[in-house]
Amino acid sequence: MINNRRADRINCSVPVLLQIPESNIQESWGVIHNISSGGVKMETPAELKRNQTIFLSFVIGNKFHFKNLMGLVVRILPEGHSYLVGIKFESVNDKKSLNEAIASIEAARNR
Image: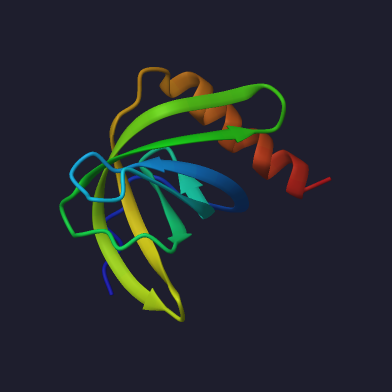
């Protein structure tokens, strides 16, 4: 299988709030299982559609707060009563902070 990702993903467990504008359910939640500067893999009970735009809000540590990062649903896999979803970030205003947050996860894991 070819890996088309531009950045390595770092395993984590980060709660995430989802804003889903083009859905009858406007908000949901999930857990980010891995993250990179290009996107996330998360688990959620929300029934999303491929190529759907969503917005993610989450906190990493005490320092990094991300609100309404725009993402595109690129992959959906059923997982019991929820879904594993691949999200590609479409718009990140502060890539430097995102990269620092990802590095902080990796540093904490290596301690």
